[in-house]
Length: 153
Image (tube, rainbow, N blue to C red; front, side):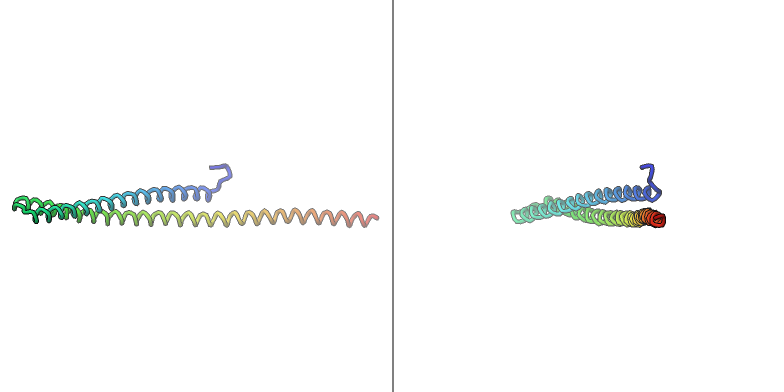
């Protein structure tokens, strides 16, 4: 923080840091969501392959014990798919919640940026007024000197 920083500048910096942290959190949650989605997809394809193996075994002839094992394993894969879908739904909710947090931080930063822009515009107007006053004073002083020198002649 510089010597000339104001409380508003501090708030802007803190808001920027909070927004950046929220963005990192959001990116992490999105990566996790993508991983969970890929795991679900892999599980789905594995279940599909296993079901095809069962169909092939049934066509070729299969004993009841092996059939029972296939069916139990498929049922456990179905349970795993249900849990994976639930995990994905929960992760997508976390992504949305984190997105909302990021948006709130972005809105806060935008508000502070607006205040900073207004403050800076007011400072520029004040500086322009001061410069105009100095310029007006110089012109007035020159006119007074010209009039007084003309009055002496």
